[in-house]
Image (tube, rainbow, N blue to C red; front, top):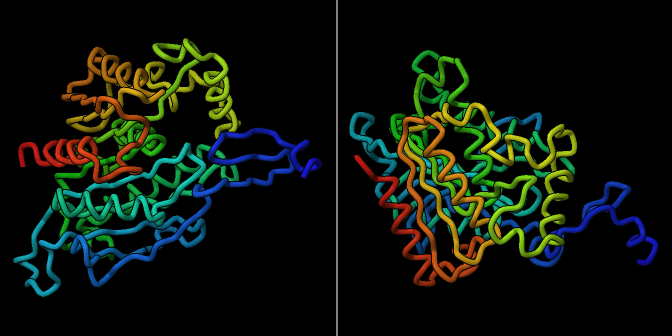
Length: 332
């Protein structure tokens, strides 16, 4: 054990350790856990789910969710068209999974409450697959989803082609997944492909993982912690040339921020979260950027990072769920 520890390159406690020989050790309950989908509807939430492979060559896949309002016996012309949530899980770009019990349970609850179809993306994780791999996987997944809206190259997944209103596409995610959702919206806004003539309706960013070289807010109170988080980005994105001011992690440095490819953004922050001030900074920066959409923010008092995943039945978690559902059904 002493010999192994002497080769430690980086550790992000309590999540993982990375060794100089490339070995990655995920710790305690952050090790991979898998819960199967429930094609015959989850008994608790009455939500159907199934797994699909998007790109066999890379293993890119996703878990799809249908709410109880959808039945498989409707005639084609009677089938309901619902908003679609494309969700990216969190975990510092390097832990958790779309198939983890916490994310499966959360998507079940969100789909049931919001009455939306959902696609939860299983992108490849760092550090084995360093960024920008997760961004490229997520982009491929988004393009696959939107291909179902094109009459000349209709996608083959009937859960999407039969039940999704492609004028109501929402990107969402928590922590690093919120970072991915933001960057997918940026990319959609600057991409001239036919598929992106269809503007995204909205983006939901829950406790987004943004950062920067210069400390702000509570980051100034613990510079040792600031330096450890600084090193996280360099570990998961070793090819970055601008460090923690890379536009991928610090949207304030992105010259394309005003071209965010959606109409509405909701930012959720938590009072006791280290990333709280970055969420507020993003909100204020986006408002001043010249972007023509509408951005909202809500703060959960007394709570820490992704508290809703750890304690989903708490009053604050239920209140945040109601806020998300309300946001997703604005003007619907």
